[in-house]
Length: 327
Ligand code: XMP
Image (cartoon, rainbow, N blue to C red; front, side):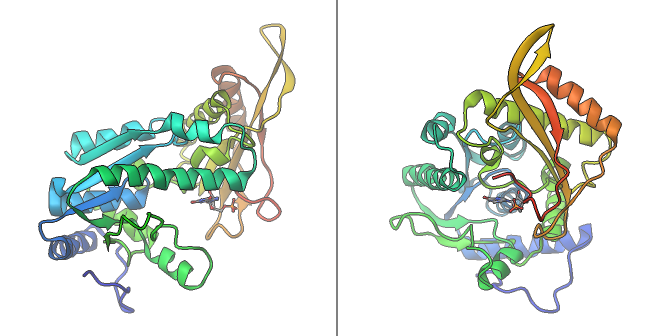
């Protein structure tokens, strides 16, 4: 079994050389733990699961089975990138599950945020379990658990979101090769493993994804407005050099319309709300001072390129009194 606790005097992994050493050690540990058996991994495309996937592919190749569930609430181009990076470039044994209709049908008409979260989390486990049952000879479950997850669950701050959740008949031994790392170390290791920068330096993204940014009951057209406006915001922040600087930035589309004017005609359409915040630990947050001309440019692009949107607003509220997400 790999080391279960972070040694107190462990050197912080800050350089490619230290990352290479960690990778070599983990490959040995993974091989020792897993032997000639198969390992299953839910690969979301987030930093932690991507680094775990790349490590395991190096250690055991196609005996790692990755399952990528597209629940329809991912950002633009994310599922495609997972396939490109892992299946095409790393020759991963990757199962892609298109569960978009399944999730959106279950979520139809559900407006309460916590109920939405429960449906998304529950359905995810169900889809993943269904795929796991189709496979034979799996003995291990790999997870992107990191050190803060362990600390937070030990201190009762949050339930350890990775651990368990699978039904009783699916009991695997856990393989958690980045569990002693802090987030910044996971990124250094990911970089050394050759993962693309936009995967390694990805901003935090909530498990329920765009589902909590399409306020109230999710509809496909409004969800598309969230996805497209988010892509424009990311593109413009990238171009302006803000992408690596601002902690988290995204768009929200509420479930009401206001009157506007397009092509000389009255139009009742949704507003898009922009949010860009900085924080150390997400417990409090300040609002990024985005240059006004950039806000105007983003507004121009969103109102012209995103279907069904006639206004753009910037959220000036720090946390508290606002939270980072809107629901
Ligand atoms: P709030 O909105 O509470 O968010 O200020 C703090 C940080 O947590 C993220 N967040 C979530 N992450 N599942 C997650 O995995 C969730 O349900 C969830 N809700 C909020 C949020 O994006 C921010 O980084």
